[in-house]
Length: 177
Image 1: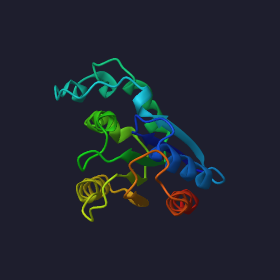
Image 2: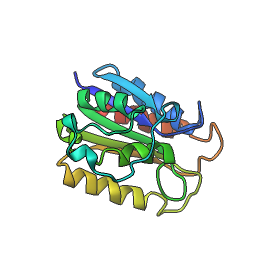
Image 3: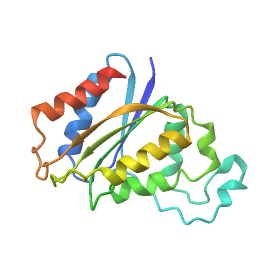
Image 4: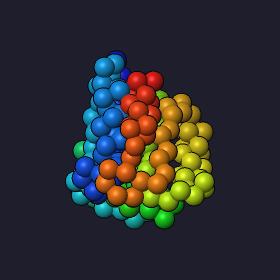
């Protein structure tokens, strides 16, 4: 049994991202321990690029905020799932702040071996997820992570726009891990 941490970057409670994450969790929880972190509910300040984490004991960030708890969760995770609505071809600002705070040698203490994505966007453009996928692939290569899979949903703007087929794909991703 692996420990999965889902970083859910949607500020809209019970929206499309949350529905997809719930379907994923239902698929994964039979074989794994799953924890969802709603990053909007955390206070995480952006990285300021001071690099003091490179010289501080335990590589701790000088900022004392919700990231301390998130670092703990990531240290215990085997699999990380990033879930987010897509705003201007990127992940939500709340989630981006967390990703940027992983610019620390502390990440070398993580045991994450697999990474997956759940993305949902209002637009239907074929290239909607291209920037995110490019960054995802770079992260996989740089950290030698296994691709856990992706669920990419277009045309889902209003709450409830995700289809049963979309939810089934998220569920199947959870089952596949």
